[in-house]
Length: 188
Image (cartoon, rainbow, N blue to C red; front, top):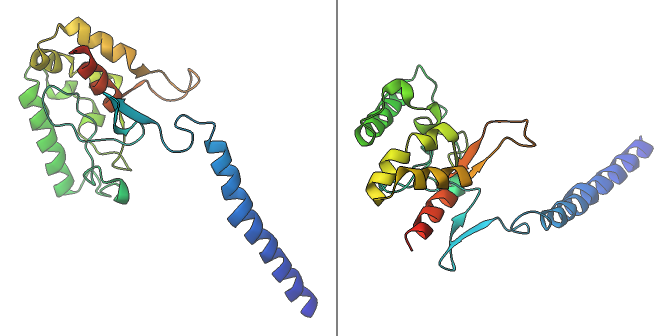
């Protein structure tokens, strides 16, 4: 019995050192080789940090591209989804309200033209990206409010579109913060 207790304590000690010290240090070291060097990829405008590329922000002005809705109000301290399913009356009311808002600002669209990601919140509530279709549907509105040619805005969308991972996995996506900063830079 004593033999097993000593082995258990040794294994516990080894695993604590491995998983509580060595592993976190290895991950922190690996992070130094990522964009932002482990501190997050900062997005700057006029030399000031305006956000992080991987954390979504709320844009509500019509001259900006809008991101996915957030169930947590884009609060990074408490990320999470609403956990409401498609049969939940409150959820359906929220989605319906989002559709109505989109149709108000995009009268040239039909309900069926609205991509799902523009009316449904992501599971984290902090999704920084929208689908390419979600960006394309907003080009006309953004161009009109910014008094820019639609082709100029469309070019900005294309420049800020990331293809699938390794060209294979997932859809193309557009980082909303980077796109809006790029459009603000055009005004200069």
